[in-house]
Length: 249
Image 1 (cartoon, rainbow, N blue to C red):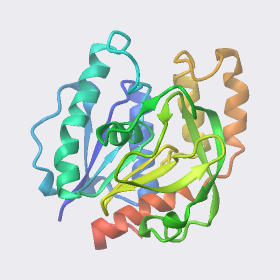
Image 2: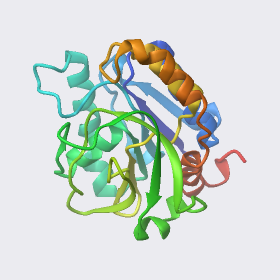
Image 3: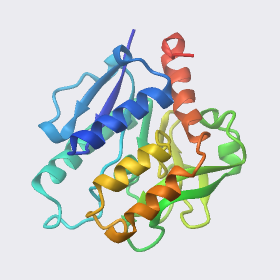
């Protein structure tokens, strides 16, 4: 009766709570099926990873590629805490789903280049497509060859990391989803989010450099008009594969 471990780095209560509820809803999980850890609240506790069905890492305003003197002490600690888990996760091929910030974590751990040089995406919807490998991957079962997802990131993976499999791409950002081993995944887009999720985040993160603050209202209208449904299936597939009968139908 293993729980899924959800690790969050958003320091704003409203943003963190919204993201957590979005994960529960889109993954089809009940609250008793997860352990939630807000890494912004303190150092990561000692974890016996074998006691969990899988690990889900959410997004946040921090950037892996920022220089050490740019990151706040909290951001640096959170990053180090998550990275400290990656050797064991990779060695065990433990079920892992990193979302946006989690893509940077996985790629960085694999030795890939994460930077703001190319492939950043403005806040909004983007057309994604499955690669040949993606079309055959069980995490994308039921997802059409082309689908729309919500994005908003300043940094991105610049080249496919060694040992990773390219599953999903888009025109502005080629590496939208990757896998290493058989069970370790990451997405650049937000599989947990819908238009309302992004509208909330636009309001909260208006001063974090994702967009000119005066364009926030227009962006909210734009994301609220998006009809995003397919990315959530990735989370449900993750829970169905690794959580078995405990997934909520």
